[in-house]
Length: 378
Ligand SMILES: Cc1cc2nc3c(=O)[nH]c(=O)nc-3n(C[C@H](O)[C@H](O)[C@H](O)COP(=O)(O)OP(=O)(O)OC[C@H]3O[C@@H](n4cnc5c(N)ncnc54)[C@H](O)[C@@H]3O)c2cc1C
Image (cartoon, rainbow, N blue to C red):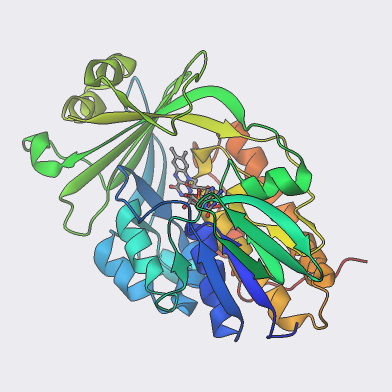
């Protein structure tokens, strides 16, 4: 691929920033256009498994993430009623050796702050919500809601589940509400008043579940994410405040060990859980999608962000290694390399079975998107 190509990445999320950082290291000129005026510290944590950490290591940010987040000593699954341990995946030096990297839990805001250091200063144009794309000779003109216009040779849509780039490429279609919402809370550990919890536990109920973990190595911040049934999501907002009593009521029948944690929550937010029907076409012409823009997954395997980061690594490898000026071959190689793995993650995420009981995890955690063979379409 000709390094003179100007690449526009739409969206400064996990996938967009990772992709921009790799492409800059390959010598491309990259600008990231982000609709938000600045990064904000939204109230949520994220799990970064070894397959993600291996990729981020190549960007030189693994150490900062280890200093910010926590390496839990295990991922534990427990039954909502008896509290019985259904499965425990030990996370230690041996697992890190086997998976090729650590497993960490971190605050999303902290992750973003670290990730932003992986791109050159001035790369991100905040306040640039994409409104449209126009063909301009061989180039593509990006038209923004703020009236600005910029030309690029390649456009990467990393603009999340409500992707504008996807709308333009594949036709506008709202995401699918899955009939569930996520209730999220973060609070200081001291609110547990001495009640001790494990580093990372998923409590499995019949029609709902609750994930509880520390987000910092000091274990001073607790994150809760409950998934509960909901008839509809009628708001245009990405999230809404949730009355604390509603959250407590959602898990009032759960085991006392976790009820005490739920009761410690003060501020709670509620988010719709959406995905899309699987669609394996991720590119057209000089436009390509990655992450939630092309394959949003339900958050039950903690893998949507992981897929965005892996996509970013593979797409940048394809663009860097597959020559000539037309990116179609690189895009096809990217799709051929990624679709099967992402499809399996989508399937498991819908099933919500990951690590409920004994689970073969090596295929997921051991994968290295920077080294995995690239698949040339036949
Ligand atoms: C409750 C919940 C828990 C989750 N937990 C985990 C987890 O533990 N681990 C994990 O790996 N994944 C998890 N996920 C999934 C993960 O959050 C997403 O899959 C991931 O953020 C997708 O990354 P992305 O870069 O594709 O998109 P995003 O992170 O959504 O980033 C998209 C970016 O594009 C910007 N944007 C949108 N539209 C425009 C526009 N028109 N113009 C310019 N910019 C635009 C947005 O502002 C945003 O910054 C969870 C998801 C949910 C809902």
